[in-house]
Image (cartoon, rainbow, N blue to C red; front, top):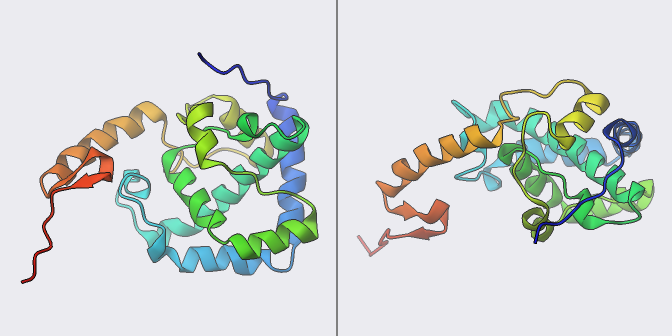
Amino acid sequence: MANTLSRPAPETVAERAREIHAVWMADPEMPAVLDGCKRYSSDWTDEYGQVLIPEYSVERDAPPLIDDALRVMALKSAVYEMTDGDELAAELPVPVPIDTAVHALTAQFTALSRVQQRTGRLFVHSTVREHEAGRAWRLGDYTHQAYRQAFGPVDERYWIDEPEAERRRRILDEKYASIGITERGMASTIDYAAA
């Protein structure tokens, strides 16, 4: 049975998301959190996330991905506020590379908790709810409309439409299988026997 989600109009969410984003960015700790995420990037790579980006380089691509992750979190928080705490409605579908960056950002749990307390604006993200809400981001969808109205055009390098993301995943499936990594990184036949 499909879930029917009720969300506010994208332009209404966009206005509130801009306000939330501005409050977070004004917090004295937020620049350090974002800078830390952008620099401490060796722990947030993902075999099916960022590498969907052509000629991916964590050094070049981490800063815009983390910036977009915070914007997406502002959209999610706006929807959450405007739907009286509907976590499912707030779990907006986003492109895989951006979603991976959101996970990296939310891993800064302690610092984000302090920012959340000072600003009074929740960071809303639920990996469990991603699967319930439908994870596939599509060009022109609700998330895209709200993002564009709040923050301007998306960067197509990172905002990869779901059909294209799946095409790229299939290419990766073949390459990874040749070295023993299967099931989208969930299984491997690599034997690390002592040399």
